[in-house]
Length: 302
Ligand SMILES: [Zn+2]
Image (cartoon, rainbow, N blue to C red; front, side):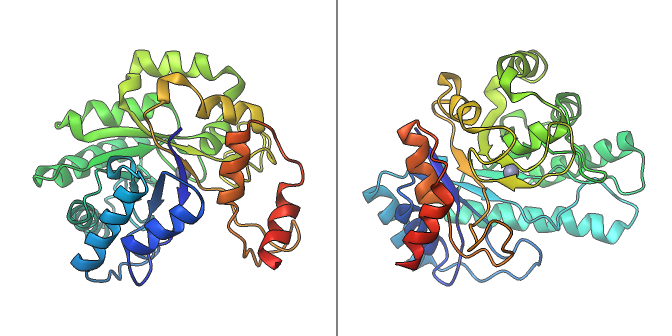
């Protein structure tokens, strides 16, 4: 089972990320190379990176399973403000160069939001932008994430993803990241995951699935909300998610948890405790633990 979670990328950069992943007993992880909401990026530290690679090797974390997440300020869909559109293209290019320098081979990207322009035009903008980015001779696969359909997001169904992928020249550098919360919120019944995959395979091809984000959802199917919940505590449920994780077709694909930190109470906004070590353990055990959140609170208060 290749499973990990979102981790931070702090002062010691990838080395901090690896250490955090190991503390969760994970064998993969996902990180942003800087704050996702701004463009400030620290200079990469080659020495620390070497240390990170060594630590990964020692702990059997294959760097090919490690995933970077593109910042969400990048919007390749809207070209109304040309400066912003051009900036998104160049910033994504820089992020991918950072991935390559770190040795990372996969970057997850939200396709974008149309904000006030026609959806078909928006899809064309994404295709143009991605082809521009991929013109640079880089070997990082861009994985388009399946989106919940919040606001004017694109990539909310297989047809839209296919439309983008079909327009990409370098086919070996484009893939998909399935997100279980987003699929549920976009209207996919994950209890019928086989049906979804069959249609996906016909339209896009299962070989394009490169990453899976495993999240439960706070909202009902088709809600278009995008609010993640801890595994087994949402509307998708533990067994459905574990079935997806254990699906033989995705045995070699990294599964990444992006579930929320746990607060002192369920509605506490001050969420302090990362749940990943405990969620990974619960997933491996194969049994849902109703008391997981309480146990996490207790563990961190020790
Ligand atoms: Zn996701």
